[in-house]
Length: 67
Image (cartoon, rainbow, N blue to C red; front, side):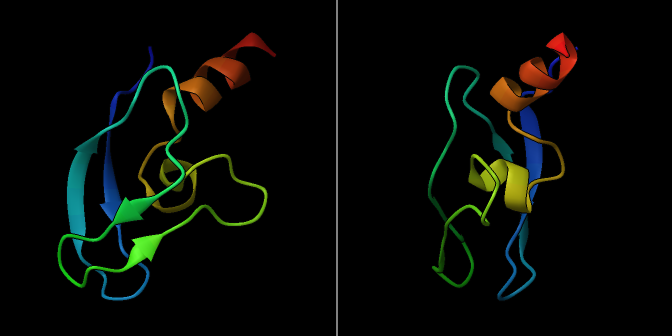
């Protein structure tokens, strides 16, 4: 089962917000609704959900399931 929602946690202020993830693409940027910081993926991650979300993005979930 592919998860399409994840709780994003800002590494700067700790603010958390549930977001809907795109099912067919990786999201490269995310703006924190609290402190306005623009988050980018950590080295080695494909998107911000893989770096700061409670679940990896759907493309990564599907890729891992194939292996």
